[in-house]
Length: 66
Image 1 (cartoon, rainbow, N blue to C red):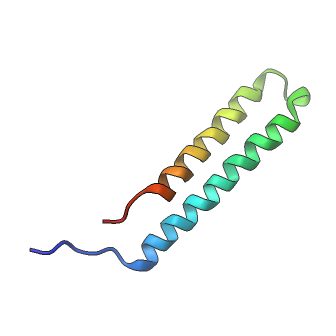
Image 2 (cartoon, rainbow, N blue to C red):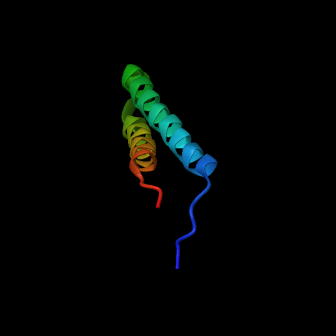
């Protein structure tokens, strides 16, 4: 029996969302770094959220469509 194929648009959209999340993670970490004195001790929360966006975006980009 053959496997069902995913629609091409769905795979393309998954890659696009991964790219957007990757860019958002980079921008979040950059702006957190630029605002370190104003953020005080809460900067770690923003870096962690930016890193989470980076990891999820990278996972979506590298995922293989089967």
